[in-house]
Image 1: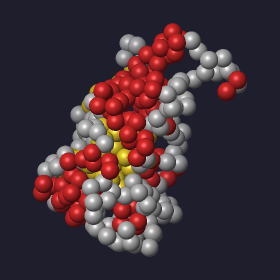
Image 2: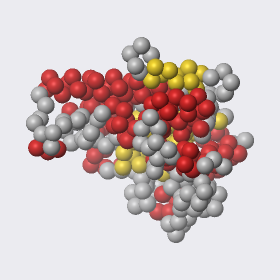
Image 3: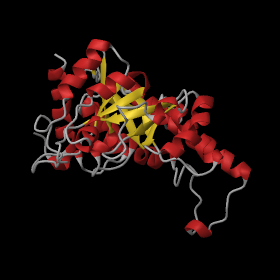
Length: 321
């Protein structure tokens, strides 16, 4: 098991170069100073497409470390993951985005002078270029960003900008917490941009099985980001498999975790979530649903998030063997 201080250390861009090489890629700076990657012939690129099931991780799993795009990529590479749902922290730090997609204003917070429309457009164009650099950095290392989780702003302009961020990153979807009123508002934007908005459930707002869930018909690009662990905990032990079977055409991705009927969150294999059966179902039916690891159980003493996510990846590989 690796030393926790190794993976949780702060990484400068210079320090990241060596870490990325150890993980299977060599980092380079191109002529414009952008961070890029070339494959290291001595080490394999990550591949977590297991018999057609795309295993990834939401990068919330690496919380407690350094919230940079480079550090997060290093974590994914060490775990052999070629798919990810990227949280907003690494995007913000790399592209210089604050608030709900509004960009940096400088000065004293709310007392700062508002940028002009021209200034804001120039700033956003620069930020989107940075997001394209994140996409290239990840793709060149062998990692696909299939979704991002970046809070939506309040205005139509801020909402549009969030979809532009998704397109710059190469995402097929934006994930967010379930809110049916928000789903109605976002549906026209999602259809305009051709980007899914996938709503994540907790223990009290999971998809309905006895009737047709309202999200099902709210828009062509409104989907579920089904957390199978929260579903089991919220229904006091019911299997999420019937939900997946009923709504599979509207499920963009799953969050994989183990939980118990009484609300506990134990390590994988010690709870009541049928993770193996769910993965086998995706394999059998060949549904294009991303299966993202979400590490939520308590990290054992002497371990670290990267080591624990790797255990979850191995669990998935064994389940699909």
